[in-house]
Length: 342
Ligand code: NAD
Ligand code: UFG
Image (cartoon, rainbow, N blue to C red; front, side, top):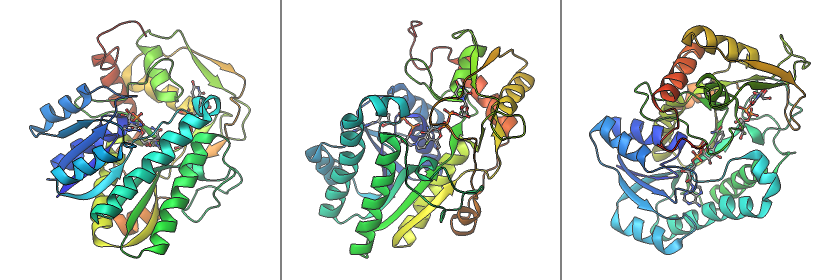
């Protein structure tokens, strides 16, 4: 079966393309490369010895999507394409709503036209309200998002679940990711953020390699064991495998189902820094600074539903995540780019 992967050249998409190919699926990618480099796909091809059919273009381009469905027999679509920087979404709300909502609307319109209605969507733990108890089950309260990025995920979930209510032949999995980090064991594909990283792990690896002077730890006065923020970090390869499990589920069921993809365990910022330093024998200088606006103290998943229905569980440890993130960064000090100006 061929899987259409939107945003397949990106961080999670490229790892998922690799796992799909290794599980015997054919892979067709559409990506406009607004936040990625086509080298990721070349490296996936080199690692697997298999070809990816790649279309450079925008998911909001209806004619291009029609052509892709006409030229390829697609059995399921995984929709990663989207903009994901929280701070940028506050500064550029229209761009985020346009890109993230219209890409889904155009994609599902064309899927409707061709009668292929199996869809997996990249949602986020950000859709959960801040006032829930931990761990977060899929039934926890959603909404009250604090930024336009979060609202695009929340609204897309509403759109897709409404479509499944109206038309019983749709099959949609909404996958709520917790905090993906790490890289493929080969060190050939990994996370390559543009500019200054917003997220913790790419910041740590860039400090370790000497591209940034020190890490700012955003607050040590939270109500957590060491006062720093606690998150559910998940190895990107485990996350990618969760998508392969979701493809099987989506193609065998109908309706809309929500799944958490997380480990169920929370680690603090200082746990991350200490594990990274110990496992890789490299220094990560840091200073404690004020809390970052919008952050919450603690966020981790209850992954029981994914285990029960998808038959999927994470396998990689925090040490694996730290080792693999560093392996990627040290083999690719400037990511996919050979340019050292970043
Ligand atoms: P990424 O930026 O590396 O990948 C997204 C890809 O989509 C990029 O290759 C980009 O070029 C492409 N893209 C964006 N808009 C497009 C459009 N209109 N048409 C075609 N291509 C387009 O991000 P990622 O970390 O791999 O995230 C993938 C998805 O998972 C996103 O939807 C993101 O919001 C979601 N997600 C990510 C995280 C995380 O922490 N990385 C957490 C929760 C959810
Ligand atoms: N942190 C620092 N210093 C940094 C970066 C982060 O101390 O330079 C801390 C944060 O305060 C937080 C933790 O590290 O306590 C994790 O922060 P990230 O920015 O890596 O991740 P978030 O949990 O804030 O958010 C991420 C994505 C969101 C997504 C969410 C849940 O950025 O888009 O995970 O999936 F919604």
